[in-house]
Image (tube, rainbow, N blue to C red):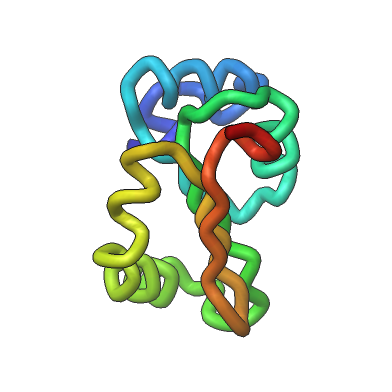
Length: 100
């Protein structure tokens, strides 16, 4: 689903977080503000996949990268985490950030 599918493209980030959390969805974004806001919320949901890649910005390449790494990140995403894809590595951080 895309925020456009909910007519939420102009919605506040908190509204997007609450919708994703309520529907047990995983947010996928290239907006680094989402990671900061998620940390401030101090909650374990929703999980977030953040693409910080400079190279391979095409959606097809990002989908390929995501699918190739899904076996390694599936369980953490189900349990609440932030997954960061960048050009050099893949990082997984459990939620809540700074929590237990």
